[in-house]
Image 1 (cartoon, helix red, strand yellow):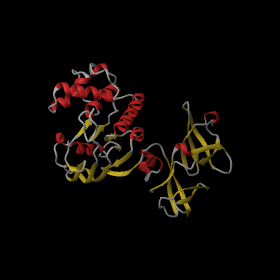
Image 2 (tube, one colour):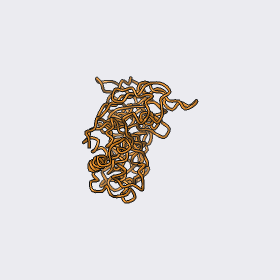
Image 3 (spheres, rainbow, N blue to C red):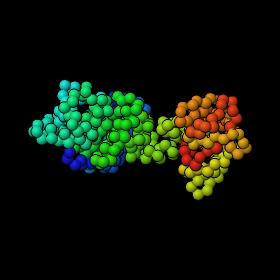
Image 4 (cartoon, rainbow, N blue to C red):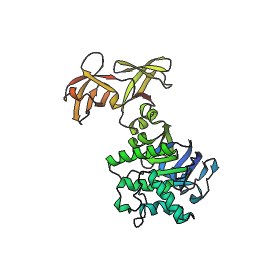
Length: 353
């Protein structure tokens, strides 16, 4: 396969209206070459509209879009130097995997022999060497997905677009294929824009995640940053389970805040929050359970569910109920048991009230 030419992507104050409805009010994003950036959010948040504008399938109402430094705002889709992997894969069922991969090359004017040589290289790159003769129906869902990726990559695009590429796969296969996509992207170094509503998928494959809400960026950053330091209750809840409880900021020590949670003191990053009442997001795995004592936040087990490698608890406390994931399965607690809650140093964040 020809070396891929990774391009940058820039959205500059992009707006998209559909009649009186504004899908994307004012969007500015910069995507560096050779990175995989995921647009993540619930249905109707604007992520698919954003991807379609990048692909040239929709044009902005205002603002500009650049690919590799070139203004493509009004450039037709076929002149954009991008390739898309669709949710349905869109493979031709009557054509072999090799012919599917070669189709775009032949359509662009390449002779059949050279197109097939490049298609064979493309299939080898995605781990399907020697399987080009098979029809899509003779391939597993994961293999079909890799054929779709190979078909897109052999066109040597500056940017690869992936629209919910794993939604047709079962849970176990999704985990394997997302790992394959990430490994392939890192090995070949292409720029990718990936759309999904699945938080685990986004965390697993991304260099950066852009979480969207109502057509706007709610927060963007590295996966760990978004998970461990959400800026709002929406992000805390959308990026995985979170307990949002009230606390009080008592004092500051440099960049840290000393907070009170139901009489228990804890230190964490202040993130600019001032003294007084505040909201705290606590990840379920950041709570430490102990037999009841006076050093932790007192609580009572409401429900307990054993799930093999961990136990899930709902615990009632004076500051609200906590959902807790505890991997200490050898020391589990029954409902109505009094317990003491402590907190780890990571997985707690002050958020906007």
